[in-house]
Amino acid sequence: MSDKEATKCGLVAVIGAPNAGKSTLVNQLVGQKVAITSAKAQTTRARLLGIALHGATQILLVDTPGIFEPRRRLDRAMVSAAWEGAQAADAVVLLVDPVKQRRHELMPLLESLKNRPERKILVLNKVDVSKKEPLLELAQEMNAEVDFGEVFFVSALTGDGVPELKDRLAEMMPEGPWHFPEDQVSDASERLLAAEVTREQLYRQLHEELPYDAAVRPESYTVRPDGSVEVRQQIVIARDSQKPIVLGKGGRRIKEIGEEARKELSEILGVKVHLFLHVKVDDRWSENREVYEEMGLDWVR
Image 1 (cartoon, rainbow, N blue to C red):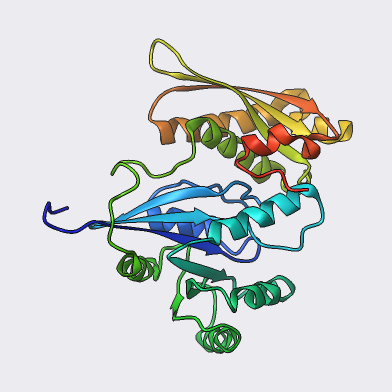
Image 2 (image 1 turned 90 degrees about the horizontal axis):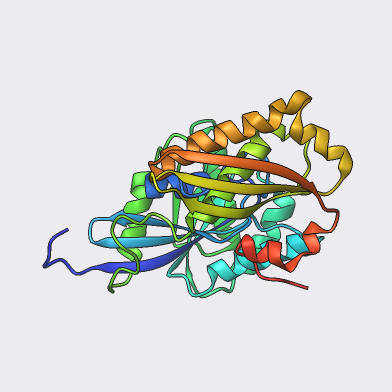
């Protein structure tokens, strides 16, 4: 970056129906993994921030939880976090999955976006597996509902179209000092990131068997004298019947979850990681204020 070049910094909220690919898109824009992805909808819980650089511009990406009809306290906290992430943004990106569409969740979202003051960009995902004509028709339909300034067609998975989107977002950001150091890619603490990585593995390996009644609570995060990191976490489930699912026969499943999470975390942190997991049954964990604070969510009644 040239010393004479004026720096720019702005906030972009990435919103959409559950499982539209928001976390994958944020990871692509940043250039590395900062948010967990899963085949399960609603895996993003906290307002994890990805920090993307484009020349002299720093783009702060709020990776909001998928917006859906809330039923439980946890659901309400997640939806509240999603809209809070869109407040005061310099741009709002609505990401739409044209394959699944999830119309029942998309239409109320469009209605809510209609009168918001932020500049809005429509991004249609999965161009790698979608036909062109239906995509164009969907874009026209969305634009009839909300006045989107621009439409982009991307594949969050392969990266197609993402550089063009990033170029445009950088152009839209206002002049101002950077909010984070050049080498920082997320505002999530390493402790929270470690819990998110384990939770992703939990969902990936047990997505057919384990419902959303599960959380990963950080217990300790310690840097050892040799520079390696010791991480202790608690997998909290709601029912005794779920414990054998998480543990697996002879404890094999939890060992596999821990091994995959440890390897990934070691790659992200660049140091050796010692990960210790244990399972706790608590049928009221979703009513525990501390759990919400650990996930970066507000306590919503």
